[in-house]
Length: 447
Ligand SMILES: Cc1cc2nc3c(=O)[nH]c(=O)nc-3n(C[C@H](O)[C@H](O)[C@H](O)COP(=O)(O)OP(=O)(O)OC[C@H]3O[C@@H](n4cnc5c(N)ncnc54)[C@H](O)[C@@H]3O)c2cc1C
Image (tube, rainbow, N blue to C red; front, side, top):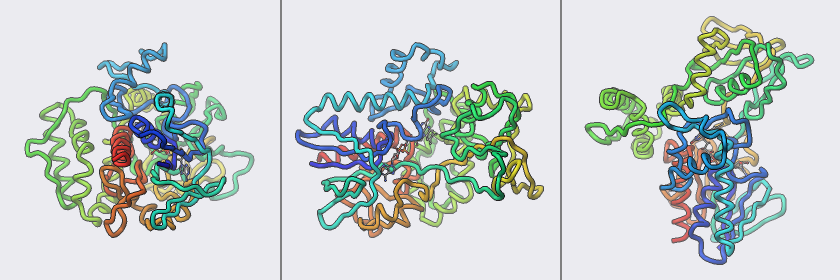
């Protein structure tokens, strides 16, 4: 059997690991991934040790049921691992460590299964074609045929900030992607504007602190909110009336509020309620008609995200201390673009310019995939999957990652996972949910 995986970030690597654990003799896996490393992607890229995982290490499972392995591996591997221990005993390790771990698990599985050939093709898959039973991928080196294909293209890079007027001699210096931001281009007293107020903003702040920055930092986000802090150990919460999936966005929000109060009473914490919603997300999401899903997105997405994607405790402490000292300011505004001397914004008080020596774009990935390495149109137009729907709503996949077409027909040869496959899951972009679907894909292929 010939299997292609398009995308070799965490999701692609997780599928490969699950397949290798069980593949019959004579199979071949080709992973299309331009990056040198498999298993990292943007999230777990090689990077500084102050960019932390936002989930406690003991909860992370690369394949279902292996929670705890990563913690043991890290404690044995890194002499300073104990310094990442929080008061409650949970570890929040650097994200790059997790990327190293995933790469090593994959290498180990490859060694354990020498009869399966794994090829890392460092190319972008440009087009996929499915005609009858013939499945092919076109890349720089030509066309190759496969029996099964897994789309694991992940997230698309940050769209650039608009530059509204020519900027003379680097004033301000603009880092168009926070994920590639080198803090050493910043002088220690520079005033820094960070566009975006979510977890990537916290990474930028951590990088600035680590290089000894002492100037003012202004964070600008549309909602003016920052993610809450997470805790490593949380009790389990189940609402008294169990899981009932509302049919409208309004009803779902009211239910979530009630659950949150219940969670607060039962566990003295609202976070277990968020865990409960997350675990049951696909049931809640699937019960909502399309119109109600859009309504939910429009009205409560950012509110949900600050509760759902929480800061690791160390990052939260750092930002709160900076805010208390007056060096960190969070503004609620729409960023119009970069102009000489700073950033033009539209705030409640009107249009104004926030002065900056350095502007860092931490506005998150491009959810419409315009910045993807291969255009979604080129990639999917010869498959029978609608590229437009895929780019805007994500692909619909079942619990084994099989792509579901517009007419509800299940594709037998094409699977998908990760953020690109969110349409039917609501939330399919974190380690454990991706790992669960990866195992389902492997089981389905082998069955
Ligand atoms: C900065 C950041 C921090 C995060 N932190 C956490 C965390 O702490 N905990 C957590 O659970 N989740 C976290 N996440 C969520 C994270 O997205 C997922 O956990 C997971 O890494 C997603 O993996 P992926 O493989 O789906 O996507 P990606 O990591 O985006 O990988 C996709 C890969 O596909 C490749 N690709 C794309 N198109 C093509 C093509 N046409 N041909 C060939 N290759 C292609 C890309 O080069 C890329 O390497 C974080 C995300 C980000 C961005």
